[in-house]
Length: 293
Image 1 (tube, rainbow, N blue to C red):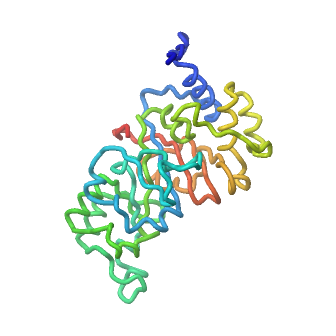
Image 2 (image 1 turned 60 degrees about the vertical axis):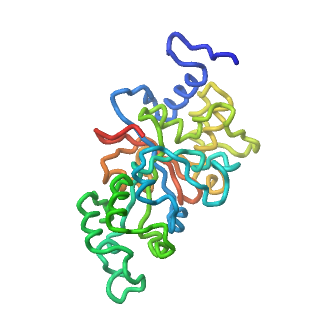
């Protein structure tokens, strides 16, 4: 096996150099070398949240384990199946993932109140009080709990999210999954752009009409690696085109779950949307003191 030649000027092999060039273009000139700051990636999906519970991996042990892991593809594929931008090819940091409790669910009001159509909550007031004690509040008054904090709470109060009765929580208790990365901006961008597995896993553009949005067609023309350029074109389509294939660029200004990120002290660096904005991935600057995963 031939060892890739490292460029003495950059210290990078050709593939990493190609990625660094492309990421700087995506980030409008921002270099990916930023060792003083920690970065991460989050993934959210409204469709996933609709069928989140009951769930075999939302247990005290799994949320507290600390080891990144693959999650099962809800559609039955293995490690992402054939879909090139499948999130199930990632490994996730469950302890660093954020679980959002709807305010009515936690307070036992509205549909969860006396006579409400959702019926009794599957936890008691003591559990709700402990959630409030550790959870920041987002712009819509939802409460966000890290998996590493939720795990012990579930165990201590005997709340079983693997039980069939937990299905009533769907869309009321949702998750912002943390993708496992090493804390660098370069690795976060590799994960978010699905380039972390190397050039042999790039998406080939078979249809000539599968173009990027007009702005990005021009900008990505500066990416020197042809295969990488085509791959990134598929992640920078218009919102209309991304409904059927690829993804669209949200940038650093407007990602559908930005309020949740801000509530836990993260700042958006780059976001992408998939489908009709039902799902998305975001590269974020992590708050000081956050772990690498």
